Every structure is written in C-alpha cells, then in structure tokens.
Amino acid sequence: MSSTVKFHGRAPLPMRDGVTPSYLWLPEGDWPDMISFMAANYPAVTDAQWRERMARGDVVDAEGRPLRPDSPYKRGLRIFYYRELEQETPIPFEEELLYRDEHILVVDKPHFLPTIPSGRFLKETLLVRLRRKLGIEDLAPIHRLDRETAGLVVFSSNLDSRGAYQSLFQKRLVQKEYEALAGPLPGREFPFTYRSRMVEGDKFFTMKEEPGEPNSETMIDVVEQRGAHVLYRLWPHTGRQHQLRVHLAALGIPIVNDAFYPVALPCKQDDVSSPLKLLARAISFPDPLTGELRYFESRRSL
Image 1 (tube, rainbow, N blue to C red):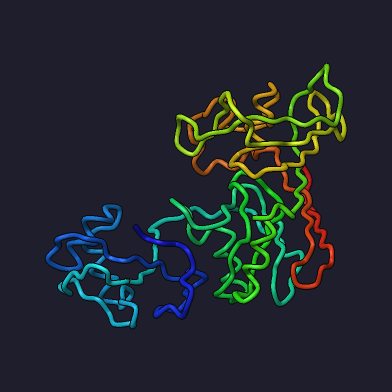
Image 2 (cartoon, rainbow, N blue to C red):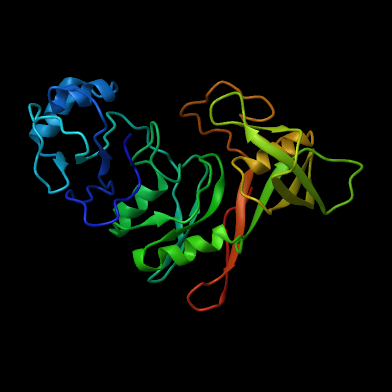
C-alpha cells in the first residue's frame, strides 16, 4: 500500500535527516476518518504515535495540507508521511564513495548494510546514509546488493539521465564480477558455466531451483586456494535474487557464512561477527551518455 520509491515531482514534505517522505494513494474503503484508517492499516504504529505525527504536521496531502486525526477519509487521496523507527541498531561499518560526477555515484558498500530502507532498517541503510551526508534528495540506486553482500553499488544522482543508466541493466550491458569464498570443487575444469531454473523458495525471501528451462547463468573460475577454502571469481550473466548463493550451494559448496543456503538458519538479528564471504568486486559498462567504457573496482577484500 505504501511506497518507499522516490516521488517523481516535488514532494510536499522535505528530506529530513536523509529520509524522504513515503506516499500512498488511499484505497477503496469505509473509514470514518484518517486516524481510523492509519491505525487499522499500520498496526506497528500506535494510535497515539499517529496523532503525534499529525500534530507535528508530518502527515499531509499532495498539496502539503496537514491531515488531522478527524480529517475525512477520501478514496484516491494521495498522502505523504515520514517512515519512522523507534529503535534502530547502528551498523558499525562505513561505506566508501569511490566515484562521483553530475550523473552517478559509485559506492563501496560494507557487509550488513542494506541498500535501501526496508523492514527494521531505515537510517542505517546505504541510501539514507548517502542522502544525509551528501544532501542529494534525488539519489537512487540503479541496482541493489543484498544486505549480507559487500561491494560496489551504482547510484543515480540526476533524474534527467537516470533512465539512460537504468536501461543498461535492462539491456544486460553491465558486467559484474564477484568473489566468493567456499569449499573446493574437485573434478571440475575451470572456468565453467552453471545454469539452472530458479524460482521463489518455500521460505520468505529465499530462492530455490526446480527442473525446467534455465533462467539463471553464472560463469565460475578459481582465483586461489586459501587453506581449506577456495576463492572463486563469479560472473553472473543473469540477475536473479540470491543467484550466486543458490548456484554455489547447489554445487555443494555454499559460500562461507551463508545463513540462507543450502538451509535457512535462525535469524542472527544484529550479530555482525560472521559476514557472508561474498564481494561485488568490479562493475563495468558503456556510459550511455559518452560511450566511454566505465570500470570500477572495490577496495575491499574477503
């Protein structure tokens, strides 16, 4: 129902401490007033909390008019509000800005930091941290990394050129290179390509393989032996969710410290002691505005 996507236009509420307002269109329904709707549809926020936010003027319509608890409910009305979290555990790792021009930013993300706000993460996300530090309200990621994965993320800072950079991913003109630490895989000649059909898993936010036409493809090579483990270089030719983690687990060499594959373990919550040994090492693409080949490499290592 709600939207965390940046509003295309001038939102009636300003960016605040890196957080831009969320918005929603009021659906069909029969509620006597706004507080009844908000309390019924956002059970994680109490009636008193909504009243406090409304008293501060933090819930408004598209024209910026404050909405009160007794404001009438109107289907089709677009309302804006700030998402807030009562408590958020700080993530003790810092991102590094590697490149910036008038169109894009390239950022080296640490393990455990989500790319965008979701669930129990808001200000402790890469997007909000960057907005707060750089003051760029229109900042948006062109692609994303899992919270558990470290490495390169490309952001658009210019709404006018954003579509051109997004189209690179849609046209598969972006080459990504990852590194992963996992067990040895004897009997294989490297490099080789692994393909499978991936679908949504039985547990929330997981994927699985099933028989059928492959829809995911990864090239796998060996970099070096590291004790009992091997450092692999991975080139995903498709971009399925958790693709690299699923593929290595299916080969019998799950990535070190993977809490999802091959078996989803109990949630570690705020434990940051055992990072997933997966790194988005490099990214390259033809710049859609200049035609120049862009190449960026992470400064992190596994």
